[in-house]
Image (cartoon, rainbow, N blue to C red; front, side, top):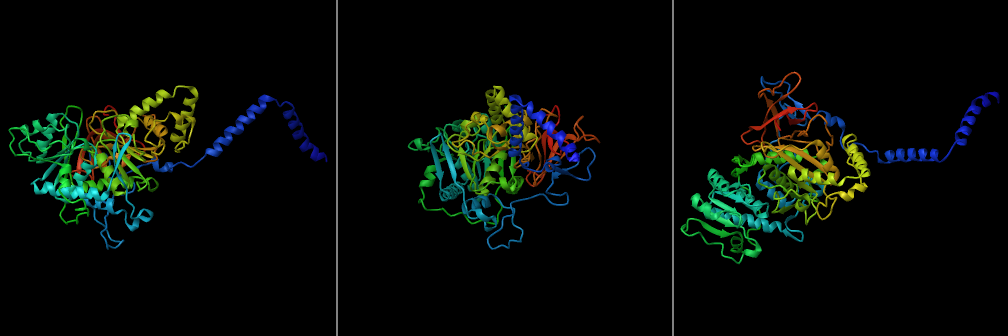
Length: 570
């Protein structure tokens, strides 16, 4: 008993003293500790991706040339392997072990109509919807068979009238996409012009691209000016809305005679039975004509004309699909909305990737005309959004102005910490009431793509803005660097890279896709040394027009092997 008293006695005396001094303050302190510990234990979760994958995101070559950095690739494409060239399309009856074709736009539309193959598992045979958004109430769903009919009839009409090079001067619309596919099936060259441009720019782009046919909308195309300044125009197809179909759109300006054949989209379709030409055309072995785009740099500068082969486009689509982790990839359950013009090659490639994945796609003619994310998504409930940087920047500024009270700032700080330090998307909070009403079902948006346009003269977004928009939208954000001669993206951030960096004003642009590689060429005092890698960004790959191109910006390699703008260059 003596030993027992010696051991237990002091403990008993300590407990007696502790509880003897217990008061309301003691209760409050213990309760607070229990609540804090319980909160962290209940909300603990693994990061969305392993931190090691973000610490070294690209793979450098073992050898570099003088005046250049090492060549950086995706970690999934070793230096000894070729970059991804296409979609690996397998024809019916081909062995599942055989190598498929790279594919082109004809394969994309065929898959959009027929659905995924048996290799796609539970989504095999499922197709998406194609919608046109007119305001907040009028949503038009288009039959895939009807769109195929439009593709067949429009392509046939242009060919029969002697058309060869077809300029598309349209906002985001089903007619733009249908004409693009029509050109692919009928051996025509599509020329996608940036919409809503000054008259002199439109005429200049038509002249440089040698277009003989234009598909456009009344009120936006300077017909009188074009036919006077560009006599090579031979054919014009008006895309007329329902309210103006009763007018006579076949009239040619006086003095032009019959040199321009004018028709309307609806008249071409009405000239054939409603059930005619609804089958996807048979694929010929002849390669489709290239796709011509124009890249607008700073305001007032001449747009750069670029030709993309269908191989470039297919490679860019494959790169985008491979860059998205399997749990986040496009599927028939998604509704994809391009809120950026399809004349932007990055937006176009993503839209084609969504069609190839059998996701539903919505077109809004006001895309690119407003930087308001609420207006851009009104009337529908998108799950995947392509947005311009200015739209995210404006939304972030508006949301930060709403977070004024200290409690809201504290909550926002905890959410930012969850993202940047723990790699986990934050859960619901009382700040959710401040979120912008994105779509008819706020909170459904899960993925946002945004790209910095090289050479546009705009300031890249910061990592803190991207982190804030992940909180405000509840969606993961992919930030990319796009360029005039690259189908898709030069580089883009990992879907689950939520880090906030304090070592620079701008965010990085992630790592190369499986279809690109880049290196930095010495330029002035921006050069590669033992301690840094800086220089002019040179990108290569099967998705690059011509195989290799300069991005026109000076970049640097960060310590995590991601690409960013060098100081004094962005």
